[in-house]
Image 1 (cartoon, helix red, strand yellow):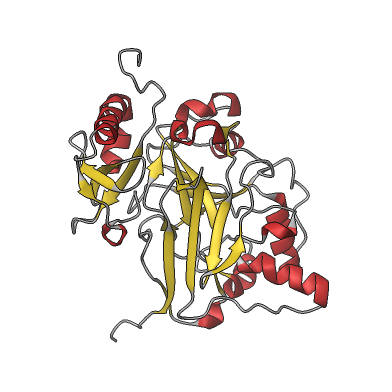
Image 2 (spheres, helix red, strand yellow):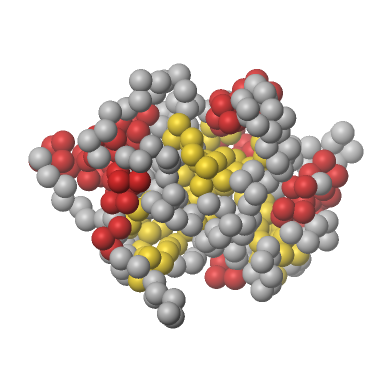
Length: 339
């Protein structure tokens, strides 16, 4: 279907401009992240995903035109960008990195599940109030044990129930970078009730751009992203694990797992879990892992969880260029609503 078009690789980068509406305005962003145009194909990203079969080629044409003409478009201002999907119908977060699972379970004195390598871990998180890439992460108390988690995710079209890993690639339309904020001290009492994460998993922040798998080129392989996940805390190196080789369950396998008993609507987001490598020189993509390694080595946790004023920065680069644009979240004290 694409042979009449020179970009037959389906490369594209999309975002959402804050226009004071709930779902924002769909923009097409240049490959270098510097310029954007408001899309004439669809008003919002969800609208485009709802009609992806029709919208995709037209969006690619806009992307190609933008990249060909340096005078086209407006200058990207990251502070004006929302999460690419400011609210989504479904946010399903996996935990596909075995090293992360083992470390964070140790940190809360829990055993890894017996099905660690046969059955993926997933939970359904809140998707109504995603944070933008530069938004503050606001919470009432540091006692919650505020942590960041640098993750990847994929966005689907309509996915039938019973989709196999073999056919999953047909349904993955976009790839994302995110900070899955976690409240570590609220997790153990919550999970002790055997009813899942809720108050311990608040709003997630997304990098400004969703990209097609083809935009990742040879870095997208077997349903995994083979690039380093860069995270800094207060301007200092925190981690750069490679997201590819140690992702035990691929996005294709996660998709098969979550469609066993339900179909998925267009615009569903499926997360990878915290990117983690066994090689400790790669650092960590969350503080919980770092703390656990300290405890194993010294007998005590040394690094505190996030404090108000801390700055978390997350990015992923290919050949030195940011793929998804950066996340920069300042941890901020939330004010209680007026009684």
